[in-house]
Length: 267
Image 1: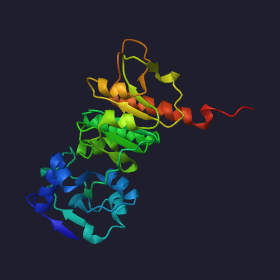
Image 2 (image 1 turned 90 degrees about the vertical axis):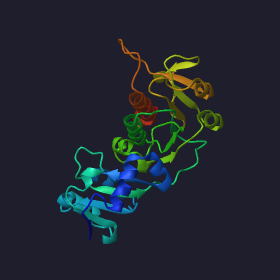
Image 3 (image 1 turned 135 degrees about the horizontal axis):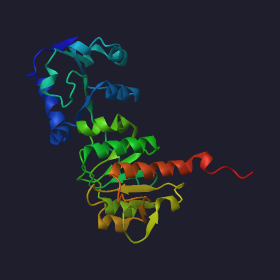
């Protein structure tokens, strides 16, 4: 197996650029998965990494050995102890690094369940919404131009592998897309005309959800293109929810309504 002994190695410098720069990721069409969990999830989807970088002290770990057992040796590289600490953003620096090609994007769908994020800028929020969407059975995710980079290390870690369960479209013009979408479009809003309570809606049919910026929410222009502004009922003094929490509540209410037990057959 090949081995890298210096943090100044060209391959590690390339990894460092991908970890720190959205432009580098975009131009190369590559990104880096940090940690064994993301590697395992990626491999479980049937994809092949470009290269897996194994910290020397972790290389014989049973879980890691099982994960990489089916990979050809030329896709594995050992890294001498300490070399990865110069490039990784992880607190625990001695973790496996996996270089992958960013999956090809799909055209924004005009039908079927999907989620659009408008100007959601916190990586943790984007990653959490990705994870919640996948868990709720959503397979289409759209992001406007000024969202956090979906392939950044922080978003990938927060998504915990859910990226590879979704078809993703970025730089989507929200208002134009919503106008062309064929099913109902719901946008969360604290106060707006045509406002409906979440639990008043029938969510069994295909639909799209729009979740907006952490501070300002869905823009007025996009909200005007939606079929319904949705408010999540809350008790007490809390005025609003974090966007990732709000998305999770909405998507799981949609999933709940579609479960067979939610609508039992008439006797």
